[in-house]
Image (cartoon, rainbow, N blue to C red; front, side, top):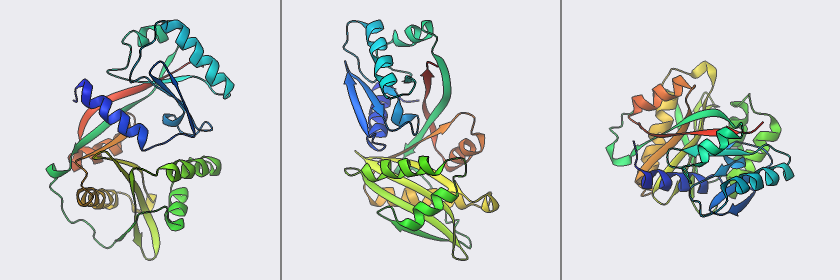
Amino acid sequence: MLDQENIRTVQERANNIWPTEFSYLLNGWILRFCKGVTWRANSVLPLNYWGKNLQGDITKVEEIYRNFSTSSKFMLHDHHSPPELLPALTDLSYQPVMPTHVMGKKLDDFNLKNSDNDYTFHFFDHRDPKWTSALTRLSPNRSSYKMKIIGEIIDRVTIPQKGFFYSQFDSEIIGVVLAIIDGGYMGVMNLAVEADHRNKGIATSLMEHTIRWGRRSKANFIFLQVERTNTPARQLYRKLGLDDWYTYTYYEKK
């Protein structure tokens, strides 16, 4: 598990690599808004707090999110600020939603194998239409509107370095992943594999290619976020060698 300083560093990097459409700074809290698409881009990140009226600032948060026609959500990790925030939210009937593990590892500590098998792998440093189309097809639970907004979020990443990977079999793209590097940390997201090709090492190979790219790009660490209920993904990442760094949970007022 990471200490307070390193957790805040990773949270800052995670915020940078998934840029919102609009943000508002309230006494150290970062309020994020992005047309309601993805919880991370539409919640409060309480890394720091220098306010004097906690209850008043929570009320202000709720007013601002109402103006965006969405519920207020706080993303709380083990060292949110101030420490009194969680009991204050609980007293106001905020409910915990979507507990999430952040897993990571130093890139030099991986012992990689070659598990490509019969699949070919490709890399782009930009959002290629083939990659985007494949991600949309491999994300059946996301509406076309959500995929459009996710594409806009990815396109807003301009300072960090982006890497788009896909695996192909018989001219069909059957797996994709996105990696973004910021400040020596490589965040991995949107890993998806065609259902008929799962349990064949595709996700493992995509991750291995991503790790090699991160090393070539001078990143020092890899991290990713996976919901606690996603047991298969957590098992895959542990098999690759990633460690549990810390957890966070969203608190939402319905």
